[in-house]
Image (cartoon, rainbow, N blue to C red; front, top):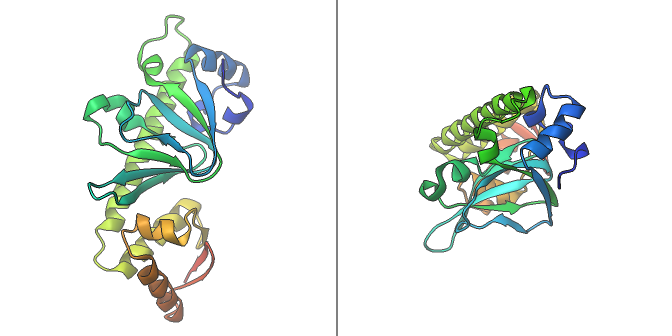
Length: 219
């Protein structure tokens, strides 16, 4: 069936589905997996995307290139998260974006038409995966709202604090690890890397945060 059953154990897509049913489901939905080296493109913006991707391991960046060739990091997806759903659902009407493996990455692909089309076998687990997929779509919408909230802040300091606040809420702690390096974080915040680094140092001097590499403590 082309999919690694072991890699799907912790995926939210298969929440509430037994190992036995998951094995049957992977075949029923015609899923398949692919591995990508760091820096490899999973989809280019001109590709016609028909299958949604679920990150089994690694990190995927969603990138948008403007007419001058400048790339913007719109979003990033880690293990268990979904990508490519807008392109798969909207086809030619979807915004043109690219997906890049920011680390060595394993992706499980799910042909969307096999999820949306009623199963002839009337499998109970088919309905369960449809519900789980809807929940994952909702989670992606929440991430989009968070990105809008961050982008709406007036100053660079406010953008940084908003981003770190989101990470703190997601990780349930004021001790957090961000999945982006400084260049990627600046791109995500639509900021100059040097200006962001200076602002982080200033925020630490003001007692707002402490940081060491990608580890932050919110005061």
